[in-house]
Structures are given as structure tokens and as C-alpha cells.
Image (cartoon, rainbow, N blue to C red; front, side, top):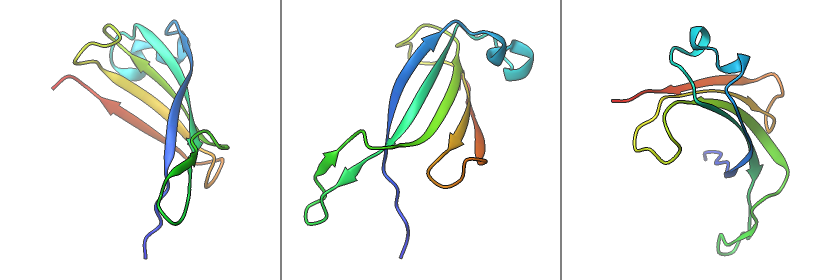
Length: 98
């Protein structure tokens, strides 16, 4: 049997890039920075219907982007903290134009 976790991401803040998004650190010139909260989603056991889409905070993500919001291709850099399993866990995600 496998464990499956269901989270919903919620943008909590959008800011200018700042030191967190320095080009030397992330590899591209960021145009904006966002902070997201990952919320646990609670479902009803008999049918899987979502009954609470914004339960407790399960993690956070700080991310840097280039380009314009809504553009089809943007660079992305982020650092996540996973509160659901361990407050010391973190991961780095990245994507680039293909």
C-alpha cells in the first residue's frame, strides 16, 4: 500500500525579486518573487469529495520567476519547506525554457 498526500497551493504573497532571487544564486534575472502555502486537502472517505480545501499548512514554497505572469515559458527557481513531514526538510526546484 502506498501513501498519497493531497495538497493545494495558495499564493500568499507576490514581491519584487530581492536578495533571495539574486541572479548569482538562481542563474537568471528574476522579475518577481512569490511565497506559496501548501494546504492539506481533506476528502470524504466514501466518495473522495473534497470537504476542506484549505486545511492546515503542510508546507511553504518561496519562488523566483522571470518573464511576465501568464507567459507560456518562464524560468523558475524555488525552495520548499515540507511542514507535513519534517520542518527541516527542504527541496530546490528549477525549470527553464526548453
